[in-house]
Length: 247
Ligand code: ADP
Ligand code: MG
Image (cartoon, rainbow, N blue to C red; front, side):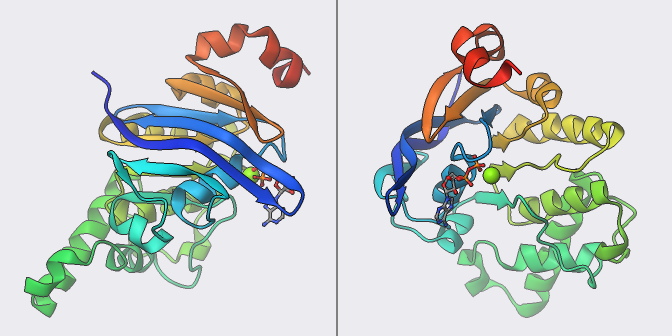
Protein backbone atom coordinates (compact mmCIF):
# COMPACT_ATOMS: atom_id res chain seq x y z
CA UNK A 1 0.00 0.00 0.00
CA UNK A 2 1.37 3.37 -0.96
CA UNK A 3 0.59 6.49 0.96
CA UNK A 4 0.93 9.93 -0.65
CA UNK A 5 2.66 12.28 1.77
CA UNK A 6 3.66 15.26 -0.35
CA UNK A 7 2.13 16.15 -3.71
CA UNK A 8 3.36 18.77 -6.15
CA UNK A 9 0.30 19.61 -8.22
CA UNK A 10 1.13 21.40 -11.49
CA UNK A 11 3.83 23.59 -9.92
CA UNK A 12 4.89 26.45 -12.14
CA UNK A 13 7.52 29.11 -11.50
CA UNK A 14 8.52 32.01 -13.70
CA UNK A 15 11.62 34.16 -13.23
CA UNK A 16 10.87 37.15 -15.42
CA UNK A 17 10.57 35.70 -18.90
CA UNK A 18 12.11 32.35 -17.92
CA UNK A 19 9.86 29.43 -16.97
CA UNK A 20 11.95 27.42 -14.49
CA UNK A 21 9.12 24.93 -13.72
CA UNK A 22 6.06 24.33 -15.88
CA UNK A 23 3.17 22.31 -14.39
CA UNK A 24 5.47 19.90 -12.58
CA UNK A 25 3.63 17.04 -10.86
CA UNK A 26 5.42 14.82 -8.34
CA UNK A 27 4.04 12.55 -5.63
CA UNK A 28 6.20 11.49 -2.68
CA UNK A 29 5.08 8.38 -0.83
CA UNK A 30 5.95 7.10 2.61
CA UNK A 31 8.58 4.39 2.44
CA UNK A 32 9.74 5.47 -1.01
CA UNK A 33 12.59 7.47 -2.47
CA UNK A 34 11.73 9.58 -5.51
CA UNK A 35 14.73 10.81 -7.49
CA UNK A 36 14.63 13.97 -9.55
CA UNK A 37 17.05 13.98 -12.47
CA UNK A 38 17.86 16.43 -15.19
CA UNK A 39 20.71 18.46 -16.64
CA UNK A 40 21.93 21.64 -14.98
CA UNK A 41 19.31 24.34 -15.19
CA UNK A 42 16.44 21.84 -15.67
CA UNK A 43 14.62 23.29 -12.65
CA UNK A 44 15.30 20.68 -9.95
CA UNK A 45 16.38 23.08 -7.20
CA UNK A 46 13.52 25.42 -8.08
CA UNK A 47 11.13 22.52 -7.57
CA UNK A 48 12.66 21.68 -4.15
CA UNK A 49 12.56 25.35 -3.18
CA UNK A 50 8.84 25.47 -3.91
CA UNK A 51 8.17 22.25 -1.97
CA UNK A 52 10.15 23.48 1.06
CA UNK A 53 8.49 26.90 1.10
CA UNK A 54 11.66 28.82 0.24
CA UNK A 55 10.15 30.00 -3.04
CA UNK A 56 6.48 30.75 -3.76
CA UNK A 57 5.15 29.10 -6.92
CA UNK A 58 3.71 31.24 -9.70
CA UNK A 59 0.92 28.66 -10.02
CA UNK A 60 0.02 25.21 -8.74
CA UNK A 61 -0.49 23.64 -5.31
CA UNK A 62 1.46 21.69 -2.71
CA UNK A 63 -0.41 19.16 -0.60
CA UNK A 64 0.98 17.62 2.59
CA UNK A 65 -1.02 14.56 3.60
CA UNK A 66 -3.97 15.99 1.70
CA UNK A 67 -3.77 19.49 3.19
CA UNK A 68 -2.95 22.48 1.02
CA UNK A 69 0.26 24.03 2.39
CA UNK A 70 1.02 26.24 -0.62
CA UNK A 71 0.52 29.41 1.43
CA UNK A 72 2.78 28.36 4.33
CA UNK A 73 6.37 29.59 4.63
CA UNK A 74 9.35 27.29 5.14
CA UNK A 75 9.24 27.52 8.96
CA UNK A 76 5.59 26.53 9.06
CA UNK A 77 6.24 23.64 6.66
CA UNK A 78 9.18 22.51 8.78
CA UNK A 79 6.89 22.41 11.81
CA UNK A 80 4.58 20.14 9.83
CA UNK A 81 7.35 17.72 8.99
CA UNK A 82 8.92 18.86 5.72
CA UNK A 83 12.72 19.03 6.01
CA UNK A 84 15.33 19.94 3.43
CA UNK A 85 19.04 20.03 2.87
CA UNK A 86 20.76 22.48 0.57
CA UNK A 87 22.96 22.01 -2.48
CA UNK A 88 25.72 23.82 -0.56
CA UNK A 89 26.50 22.87 3.01
CA UNK A 90 24.66 24.75 5.67
CA UNK A 91 26.39 23.83 8.94
CA UNK A 92 28.04 26.01 11.60
CA UNK A 93 31.70 24.90 11.34
CA UNK A 94 32.79 26.30 14.71
CA UNK A 95 30.06 24.39 16.59
CA UNK A 96 30.14 20.70 17.48
CA UNK A 97 28.04 18.03 15.80
CA UNK A 98 25.73 17.97 18.83
CA UNK A 99 25.40 21.76 18.96
CA UNK A 100 24.48 21.91 15.27
CA UNK A 101 21.82 19.26 15.77
CA UNK A 102 20.47 20.88 18.95
CA UNK A 103 20.00 24.13 17.05
CA UNK A 104 18.10 22.25 14.36
CA UNK A 105 16.04 20.36 16.96
CA UNK A 106 15.08 23.62 18.70
CA UNK A 107 13.67 25.01 15.49
CA UNK A 108 11.09 22.27 15.12
CA UNK A 109 7.39 21.97 15.97
CA UNK A 110 6.62 24.40 18.78
CA UNK A 111 3.21 23.04 19.75
CA UNK A 112 3.93 20.93 22.84
CA UNK A 113 6.33 23.47 24.33
CA UNK A 114 3.56 25.30 26.16
CA UNK A 115 3.16 22.48 28.64
CA UNK A 116 6.88 21.77 28.94
CA UNK A 117 9.21 23.20 31.58
CA UNK A 118 12.57 24.55 30.39
CA UNK A 119 14.34 21.47 31.76
CA UNK A 120 11.97 19.18 29.86
CA UNK A 121 12.48 21.22 26.71
CA UNK A 122 16.25 20.98 27.00
CA UNK A 123 16.12 17.25 27.62
CA UNK A 124 13.76 16.68 24.71
CA UNK A 125 15.96 18.74 22.38
CA UNK A 126 19.12 16.91 23.39
CA UNK A 127 17.45 13.53 23.04
CA UNK A 128 16.13 14.35 19.60
CA UNK A 129 19.51 15.72 18.49
CA UNK A 130 21.24 12.62 19.85
CA UNK A 131 18.85 10.24 18.11
CA UNK A 132 19.28 12.10 14.82
CA UNK A 133 23.08 11.91 15.10
CA UNK A 134 22.95 8.16 15.65
CA UNK A 135 20.44 7.63 12.83
CA UNK A 136 22.63 9.62 10.43
CA UNK A 137 25.61 7.41 11.31
CA UNK A 138 27.58 9.95 13.33
CA UNK A 139 27.24 8.26 16.73
CA UNK A 140 30.41 8.80 18.79
CA UNK A 141 31.32 12.02 16.98
CA UNK A 142 28.93 14.30 18.92
CA UNK A 143 31.66 16.52 20.35
CA UNK A 144 33.70 16.99 17.16
CA UNK A 145 33.79 20.45 15.67
CA UNK A 146 31.68 20.34 12.52
CA UNK A 147 34.32 22.20 10.52
CA UNK A 148 36.86 19.46 11.25
CA UNK A 149 34.68 16.63 9.91
CA UNK A 150 35.44 15.07 6.53
CA UNK A 151 33.34 16.23 3.59
CA UNK A 152 31.24 13.06 3.73
CA UNK A 153 30.67 13.44 7.47
CA UNK A 154 29.57 17.04 6.93
CA UNK A 155 26.93 15.85 4.47
CA UNK A 156 25.83 13.25 7.06
CA UNK A 157 25.62 16.05 9.61
CA UNK A 158 23.33 18.00 7.32
CA UNK A 159 21.05 15.00 7.15
CA UNK A 160 21.21 14.63 10.94
CA UNK A 161 20.13 18.27 11.23
CA UNK A 162 17.12 17.62 9.01
CA UNK A 163 16.26 14.50 11.07
CA UNK A 164 16.55 16.51 14.30
CA UNK A 165 13.59 18.61 13.14
CA UNK A 166 11.49 15.40 13.09
CA UNK A 167 10.99 15.68 9.35
CA UNK A 168 8.84 12.97 7.79
CA UNK A 169 9.41 14.30 4.29
CA UNK A 170 13.06 14.79 3.30
CA UNK A 171 13.99 17.03 0.38
CA UNK A 172 17.67 16.42 -0.37
CA UNK A 173 19.50 18.52 -2.95
CA UNK A 174 22.60 16.67 -4.16
CA UNK A 175 23.68 15.07 -0.85
CA UNK A 176 26.40 13.07 -2.65
CA UNK A 177 28.01 16.08 -4.30
CA UNK A 178 31.80 16.00 -3.97
CA UNK A 179 31.88 12.55 -2.35
CA UNK A 180 34.29 9.75 -3.12
CA UNK A 181 32.95 6.31 -4.00
CA UNK A 182 33.21 4.93 -0.46
CA UNK A 183 31.41 7.93 1.04
CA UNK A 184 28.77 7.70 -1.68
CA UNK A 185 28.15 4.04 -0.94
CA UNK A 186 27.68 4.87 2.74
CA UNK A 187 25.25 7.64 1.89
CA UNK A 188 23.25 5.29 -0.34
CA UNK A 189 23.00 2.84 2.57
CA UNK A 190 21.87 5.68 4.84
CA UNK A 191 19.20 6.79 2.34
CA UNK A 192 17.93 3.23 2.15
CA UNK A 193 17.43 3.18 5.91
CA UNK A 194 15.97 6.67 6.11
CA UNK A 195 13.28 6.05 3.52
CA UNK A 196 11.74 3.19 5.45
CA UNK A 197 9.42 5.39 7.46
CA UNK A 198 9.68 8.64 5.53
CA UNK A 199 9.17 10.05 2.05
CA UNK A 200 12.32 11.27 0.28
CA UNK A 201 12.87 13.48 -2.75
CA UNK A 202 16.47 13.16 -3.93
CA UNK A 203 18.11 15.42 -6.48
CA UNK A 204 21.32 13.71 -7.52
CA UNK A 205 23.66 13.47 -10.50
CA UNK A 206 25.31 10.21 -9.48
CA UNK A 207 23.41 7.72 -11.66
CA UNK A 208 24.73 4.61 -9.92
CA UNK A 209 23.49 5.96 -6.61
CA UNK A 210 20.12 6.99 -8.02
CA UNK A 211 19.46 3.63 -9.66
CA UNK A 212 20.61 1.83 -6.50
CA UNK A 213 18.14 3.53 -4.20
CA UNK A 214 15.26 5.13 -6.13
CA UNK A 215 11.77 3.63 -6.28
CA UNK A 216 10.56 6.22 -8.78
CA UNK A 217 12.50 8.57 -11.03
CA UNK A 218 11.29 11.80 -12.59
CA UNK A 219 13.37 13.36 -15.35
CA UNK A 220 13.06 17.09 -15.93
CA UNK A 221 14.28 18.98 -18.97
CA UNK A 222 13.98 22.74 -19.38
CA UNK A 223 11.48 23.12 -16.57
CA UNK A 224 9.10 20.34 -17.60
CA UNK A 225 8.74 16.69 -16.65
CA UNK A 226 9.99 14.59 -19.57
CA UNK A 227 9.16 11.22 -18.04
CA UNK A 228 8.38 9.71 -14.66
CA UNK A 229 8.28 6.06 -13.61
CA UNK A 230 10.13 3.15 -12.04
CA UNK A 231 13.91 2.96 -12.61
CA UNK A 232 13.67 0.28 -15.31
CA UNK A 233 11.27 2.41 -17.35
CA UNK A 234 13.59 5.41 -17.10
CA UNK A 235 16.67 3.37 -17.90
CA UNK A 236 15.05 2.01 -21.07
CA UNK A 237 13.32 5.19 -22.18
CA UNK A 238 14.50 6.40 -25.56
CA UNK A 239 13.27 9.91 -24.79
CA UNK A 240 15.35 10.04 -21.61
CA UNK A 241 18.39 8.63 -23.33
CA UNK A 242 18.10 11.12 -26.15
CA UNK A 243 17.55 14.08 -23.86
CA UNK A 244 19.80 13.29 -20.98
CA UNK A 245 21.38 9.93 -20.34
CA UNK A 246 22.87 9.43 -23.78
CA UNK A 247 26.23 11.08 -23.44
P1 ADP B 1 18.77 22.82 -11.49
O1 ADP B 1 18.70 22.73 -10.02
O2 ADP B 1 18.04 21.73 -12.19
O3 ADP B 1 20.17 22.92 -11.99
P2 ADP B 1 17.52 25.42 -11.11
O4 ADP B 1 16.19 25.12 -10.54
O5 ADP B 1 18.56 25.89 -10.17
O6 ADP B 1 18.03 24.17 -11.97
O7 ADP B 1 17.36 26.52 -12.25
C1 ADP B 1 16.40 26.42 -13.28
C2 ADP B 1 16.44 27.68 -14.11
O8 ADP B 1 15.92 28.76 -13.33
C3 ADP B 1 17.85 28.09 -14.54
O9 ADP B 1 17.78 28.64 -15.83
C4 ADP B 1 18.23 29.13 -13.51
O10 ADP B 1 19.15 30.05 -14.04
C5 ADP B 1 16.90 29.80 -13.23
N1 ADP B 1 16.81 30.33 -11.86
C6 ADP B 1 16.87 29.59 -10.71
N2 ADP B 1 16.72 30.38 -9.64
C7 ADP B 1 16.58 31.64 -10.10
C8 ADP B 1 16.40 32.92 -9.48
N3 ADP B 1 16.31 33.03 -8.15
N4 ADP B 1 16.29 34.00 -10.28
C9 ADP B 1 16.34 33.89 -11.63
N5 ADP B 1 16.51 32.73 -12.28
C10 ADP B 1 16.63 31.61 -11.53
MG1 MG C 1 20.21 22.54 -8.51
